[in-house]
Length: 301
Image (cartoon, rainbow, N blue to C red; front, side, top):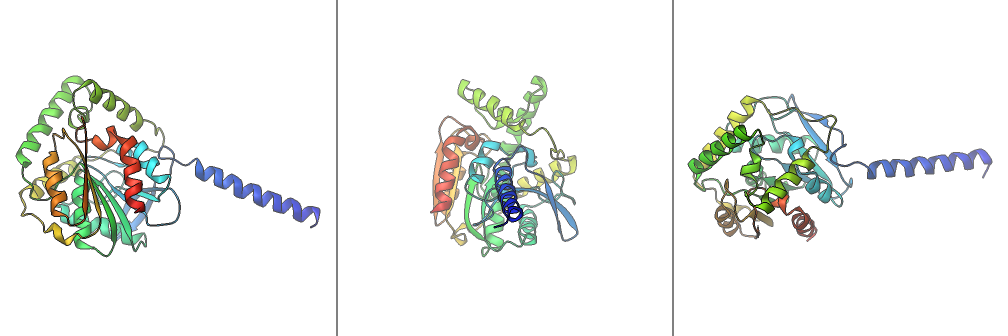
């Protein structure tokens, strides 16, 4: 090999190694936000992890945008799996208006997934996102391989009036204490729960640049209406969801009682249930050190 060719080969190898290191340094706090056209509407999303295998699509909670995902959950799963998190229609940096039903949210999620050219996906839905995940599985079963449903319950599960009352109280407490209402909604007001809340909010601040747009007033109102509609709807036939499902919740969830998660798991033909101790709606964030390995094991089965 000539000196010039050897130098070129060394530079190529150096460039590849540098690219690999740069890829390995991509985490939730610095991964770029992309957009894709979905039927004329821009959808914002972030993608990280290995560029192979069945991707895991993340569906976030009520009034959340991309920056509300716990980095320890995203990065932990992305260490082994391709992760794609997105803002559904009308949420954060995505265009359009938020629809008033979870069925429509499910259709929008399916359209986004298909716009990416994906033929098979796993789903991780938290809270409202878990309801949307169920709609995706019911409306496009061919797309879904496995599903994780966290802090969520079945449509028509009841308790919707109680959920609204609890949310209003939490927002009043948050206003009086100049704090985030998730302090009261996601974590129990115990010493352990308060520490978990503090750690969680600290992690949410790790991304300091190119953050998502805050959720709009229209989106908030439409999501609340969708949740109310879902709570008052007739129950779905969950026996139609035959894919393996991992159901997780905290044992002190004020928003979606763990009994609703247990009922949902019983109605799903191929489900496993984990209830995390001394934790609330955000139990999977409080117990992320146990939740992430459990998810990876479940997806690898």
